[in-house]
Length: 229
Image (tube, rainbow, N blue to C red; front, side, top):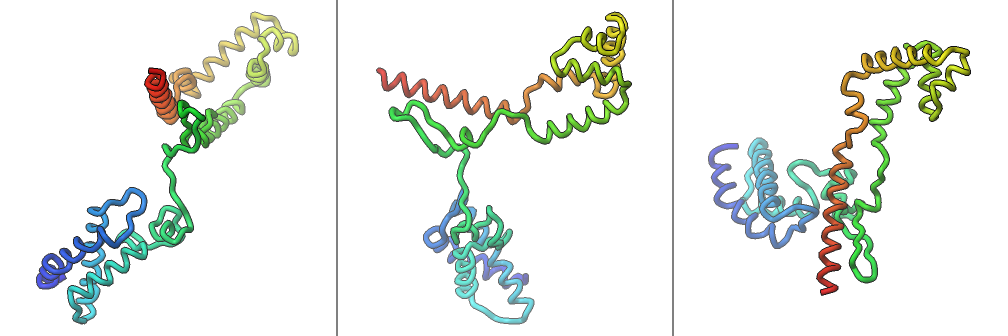
């Protein structure tokens, strides 16, 4: 962009955009007027650069007019997709709608208990990726164990004892204790010394969810106390 075009953008186009966009362009989601103005300035600069490269002559009013039209239709400097569910154009034409996880979806008759969207769609099960990774690790480890060691794992996971394994394979209890120690060493060598810590550690997403629920419970208690007073 030439210095002359830059001066026109700064002195003539930008004031028009600042005066019109907050009143004309709809804000979608977390957008605010300042962000829309910045986005419009980027689009206007692109238009001026394109026009200048083509050797055409347009007025500052034309640049501002078409930039505002683009902004109103949902176009932004970072994309114009009408299929992206998070896209501005997609939301403006009604194809998708975004909701906050903190949006209230239900409450009891007295308003003491409020259910947010995150409470409705959340579950307390493990993350599928964590489960799949653990299954892959165990599948590979089991392939390196002897048949008796596999039986030990199978019986212990089923809630049975080493004595049950000993009866099945016809070995003494002391021999099974030896197999148990060997199995523990192999698991530590394969899984790492932090395997026990990883098993009992609460995942980060669960901690955040519990904190949100505790905060909501505290808010409900305060409301109940205020209503009782």
